Image (cartoon, rainbow, N blue to C red; front, top):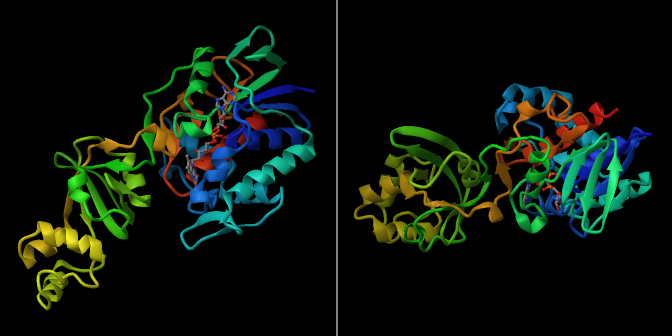
Length: 377
Ligand SMILES: Cc1cc2nc3c(=O)[nH]c(=O)nc-3n(C[C@H](O)[C@H](O)[C@H](O)COP(=O)(O)OP(=O)(O)OC[C@H]3O[C@@H](n4cnc5c(N)ncnc54)[C@H](O)[C@@H]3O)c2cc1C
């Protein structure tokens, strides 16, 4: 029986371990944290957005969109639902195609994996940070007080995002030891920083908005969704999506009442005083901030439709949900086996593919885990 060592007990490592053990492989799962699947348990604001029914390569950034498409066609959203349900539980979509456990409790998804891993008798070593990986006829994975030999290994150590979940980018060094390269890395799905004075008074307001991001005359991103004003800028689904496209110095224009025309705002505003002219058009706290900045009704209406902000940066890797960049897909075959070292596989966020907000990143972890398990059987 093939002996397989998996580095990282996150979404990709857990799925890979279950899929391989079901095929009869002897699997050892090595996780540096004291518990498996901690990031998975925190996903989707604690609700566990595991995939999205509107699946497709167009929702991902990578060095090979066709490979992403091939990967998703082998194991897509329906396969993820079936796979998770094969361990128990029930998974259902919301009105926007985002799929969650019916209980809306992400930690229960991790518990499903823990239960299945224990049922399958998979060897789990927590509190075990793999410090080196080498090949000399067999693979050796070594940690502080021990090591193991394996016929094949899977690097599923994640990326650089949210290091409080154990992901500080150390997995890239393990890949580099076999000759892999790593593309430029940046935080994605992360809050945007702007001039705090520009959003003063709006902190905590969540609103539907349309956002246009520009650099020079070029439009970098356009989209509609939820914005959450923070002390120093913007959070929420729409800001997260934009974070993949923008950098310091880029201009943002927010339409804070996307379903109301500028003419209607002027007409409605004329019925009140300058201090209550935006009633039922934008949130009161936003209105107060706008009243303070805009001169007359015409300027106020224009500011509702084109509220300008300049990006100062993001909150960085510690606050990001995913890493943009990683080991190029081109350095692996279609089962994500390394083209540098036979028997070495990579799965999940360590690879150079990141998805939009909405279940796409966990889907990538599960899809790549599936391909790896296929490659190893
Ligand atoms: C707060 C938050 C919310 C999110 N919500 C969603 C969501 O709702 N939907 C979605 O699709 N995506 C979401 N994501 C992104 C998604 O969780 C990740 O893309 C996904 O978990 C990546 O899976 P992975 O297995 O590749 O890496 P991870 O889940 O990051 O797991 C990697 C594991 O490897 C371990 N590890 C690292 N180095 C070593 C080593 N040397 N030895 C042993 N173990 C090691 C780490 O401790 C970690 O447990 C969210 C991310 C965050 C931070």
